[in-house]
Image (cartoon, rainbow, N blue to C red):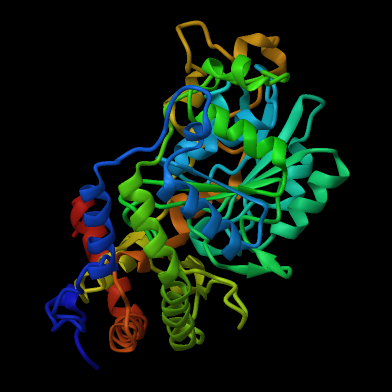
Length: 438
């Protein structure tokens, strides 16, 4: 049996994988064209046709809306900006509550606080890592205005169940599909099933413009409010004749013409990029499906997962070894971007201390202390256990996995699992050394 790399053996992967690179000649050409035009931003912060941006921005939005079969697409300089605009667009008020997952990037919850509303964390499903429908129901209160559902790791599993809950309770559903573009579920594209959805164009996403984001909706009022928030809306509402000026306090969330032009080229590559990631994830799942103590991502044959991350749940009792040891063993076999856990937002200092704006606990102090949401450890036991013990993440997005690279990663996993007994002995020896026991 081959010796583990962790124990001095030869690693399965002995050459680093090249980083993902989908910027090519087409992007360089169109960026050069925009540079030569001298028009690097078409936005005016006053009321005119150019309030909506330049030709590259508007064409990018139209092409995105056409591909995702929605009425409106609104571009932003980041998806964080898009999330802030989406929460503002639904008419949120200070003290309103928005249910959100703790198992996501911190911007999902911070976008709620940006409007002085209050994030309430529901737990996640152990198999999908997305919001758990039963937990969502338990967190609904009379102050709940909306549900924000991050579609984590590239999966839209559980989305239709949460949408049904939103409809039954008269709540607005925002999909944070930053990691889940061009994924089909329930006959539609992920990101288009809720009232507002959106995608990230950050540099390590499936396609990117360096930084950027795109919101989508079929609701004309939400779309227009997001455009106002994006571009100093308070300055134009009078000339525009805007009657509802709720949350028209605006920002500079505008996407530049170069980024939009690059995005137009990238958009044409999106189906093939997601297909390549899907095939890599599918092949890897097939190789690992019989490993003991392993829970693989859920997906079907219809492009139902974008595999931004290939997340694996571990049954540590079956394996008899800790997650940290498994990660160390895989890293020693040359597996790139493999790490344990994810973050639990509700345990960050801002939520533990309830300090966001000023010193006095705003916006939580809008309500009596006994009515504050609970952010103590233990409110999201599934997400917390996933973070602390159970999940390892293979960040497929960092590389353009071909069949050979996928095969190598699968072989590294198989090698580690064949040597679990040796890993247990190694871990025991490390523990004895650390405690000073002979």
